Length: 111
View (cartoon, rainbow, N blue to C red):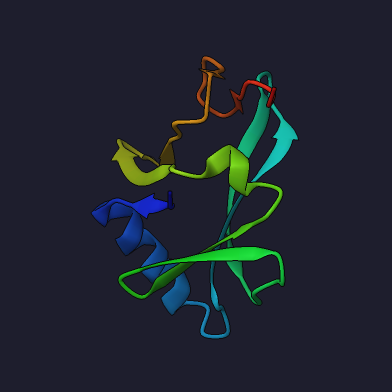
């Protein structure tokens, strides 16, 4: 599988990277938090780690570390503006539940 970016997310990431000339790409991952267990993280990456999987879409490199990959593999990342708010939106086929605010998600444990 892979990480896919919609046209809006691709443009937003290109804008971020244009302001960070030393960046090697965008790091996509997870952290334990929220009411459902995990939250997504998106940051500018300054290096590629040995355990990263790198996905390239139209010149934007998305880096995912080996620990996060099983939780996010196959995710489509979108970017939406709604009124004054703007945020990345994640469509993750591995998520089995999300909190009401959409900030965190759960996955079933591996059997």
